[in-house]
Image 1 (cartoon, rainbow, N blue to C red):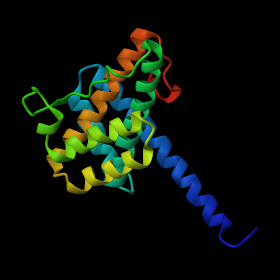
Image 2 (image 1 turned 90 degrees about the vertical axis):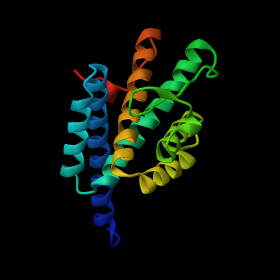
Image 3 (image 1 turned 135 degrees about the vertical axis):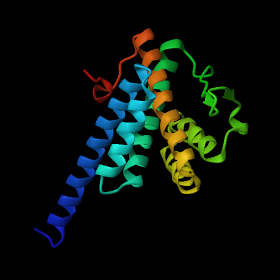
Image 4 (image 1 turned 45 degrees about the horizontal axis):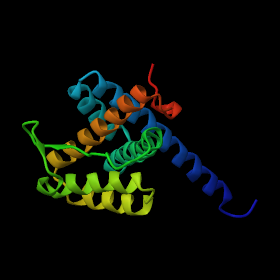
Length: 174
């Protein structure tokens, strides 16, 4: 074996485990949101951030996972109905009122742009947007980014269910 290959293999295994934990947490968060239990989403994500060695970077991985999967679902929904022109990303303020994307706080607006980039298959731009959003967000703004990402994904799941669009296996929580 070449030098470093065991280390490379261990790093790959660690990455796969982090991705699996992120998918599992994302699916649980979406299931809680579908039940209308934002408090459970908040507790789940807070516990996840505390339990993971990467902390905020692992929370960002969950958000990335949610938005990437939302992009996949948006594409599937577009194929089912024949267009993605009707794709709408809703942003809500602290009172629950919908606000235009340009009126949203910059970190949340940037997260919405990440979702749109994923929907258009531009993963590099999406990841750059998420990096910016997580770098400039206050703790309250990070909470809003996480909750919106979960809710956007939950809405895509509901639309996929209504139209018979298949979901990724990991999105299904028993």
